[in-house]
Amino acid sequence: MRVFITGGSGCVGHYLVREFLADPSNELVLLLRTPGKLTLPDNAGSRVTVLQGDLTDGARLLHDQGRFDLAILAATAWGGARTFDVTVDANLALADQLIGDGCERIIYFATASVMSRDLELIEEARDHGTAYIRAKHKLVSTIETRANAARIIGFFPTVVFGGGEAPVNAPRSHLVRMLFENKRWLPLLRRLSANGRLHLIHPADIARLAVHFATAAQGDGPERIVLGNAPNTVDELIAAVATATGHRHRPIFRVTENRVEFVAKVLRLKMTPWDLYNARNTDQSYPSAVKPSDFGLPMEMADIHAGLRAVGFAKT
Image 1 (cartoon, rainbow, N blue to C red):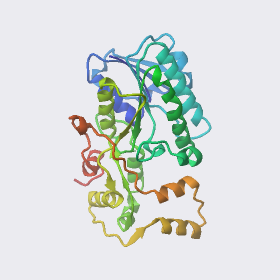
Image 2 (cartoon, helix red, strand yellow):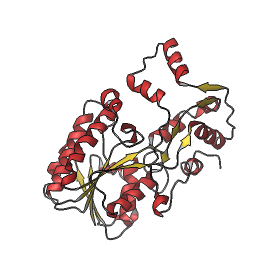
Image 3 (cartoon, one colour):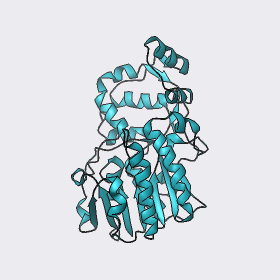
Image 4 (cartoon, helix red, strand yellow):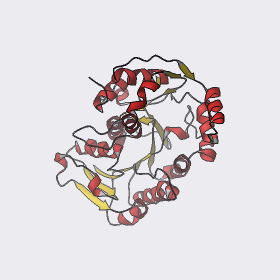
């Protein structure tokens, strides 16, 4: 199978590259702005071609690359002036070029934050989200219009948890970085309790799902796939982190929506409409979320305890 991948040097991207190279019949073409950030596995051999350039120049770089069996559009901009240029315009241009060259299956990456629990795009994300959130919302609504020309599969990860482990040496995900950077404050965190439910998923498990959906039977129209383990409550996650650092979760203060808004007012902190929306909608779980074991595949991270051990955060 011939596979085109963007974002291969990122946290999820490293695992995507490694997982697809596990099949010796796969050939990869990677679009990378900084190829030196990608650590290729030993079995890569001559099966990887790197196109160096910005995502906004990707469609031009693809002109002479021929037909792909699968494309995975994982690269994004996390904020700033170029967010829409990269996340929306560049990905649409790539999709059009790929479809024009005969690619019949495209997996693009969005985020679960732009969807309701019944997988409908939410107006709050479109109107009040950060630049990243608004761009992902627009990407979904526009790239799905190509579903009459190719199979369009949207991946909507929940909270990515992983990275930094050998031998992959992928960058750590945002949540993992936050845990290590704020380790000194965790004794205070274990004193808190909060409402909320959310999913975590390891980037290796995202990659395993990408390989699965690369050949899975086709559904009707554009598909929206939420990626996540079984949901955890916020208190379960706090307790797991406390245990990993040799402590117990002994909450003495419960964080509620009203208290968040009250503290913000007292401290004169400005809460955006998007902040308020998330504070008032603490159940960020999705009944339809999938994980590798749902398809009989092995799991890299069965639960948060395994994840904490894998990234070297737990004491044992």
